[in-house]
Image (cartoon, rainbow, N blue to C red):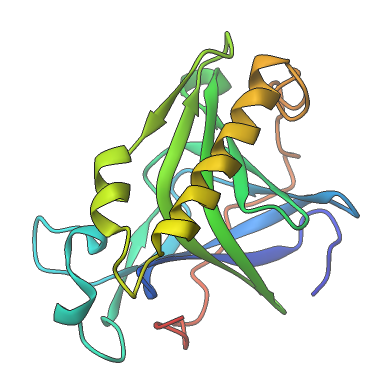
Length: 208
């Protein structure tokens, strides 16, 4: 995979082993310590074609198609984000930007990542953290995380303890204003030459 700034790769989010979304992102920086990618609002993407009003995390894995759901074209609607993926860590950090590129805060996604050439496959760990610009923080999705613990498609009780401890380690970084919560990248603006990525080919991997 090319790691040159501006190169487009695919960020694929899997929930309970099944593909939820696949969206193209641009490499901002790649070092031995990790990778930064830019996710632009409105980017064409693929999303699992689910029954109306449902989310993949709310469908028990045993009730899903064995080979995954078909996908349909959509657009990323959740705002601009700069995503830091530290090497060897079980989390990523999203700098979230609102209107007029105003920094809104950090979202920490606890996860397991697999890099495959042009693809970044992310197995979501459900439990997340929200870290405000003043670095106060809260857990997110604790109830859903507890409900999934022990299910063979998700994580065991021991794995759940490790996932939560990873979250606590990230929270301590925020409490001490250590990178990535030291103010770095909060004013990031992508180069004007970066056009919105086009819709990539239909994902071939729908079950991780």
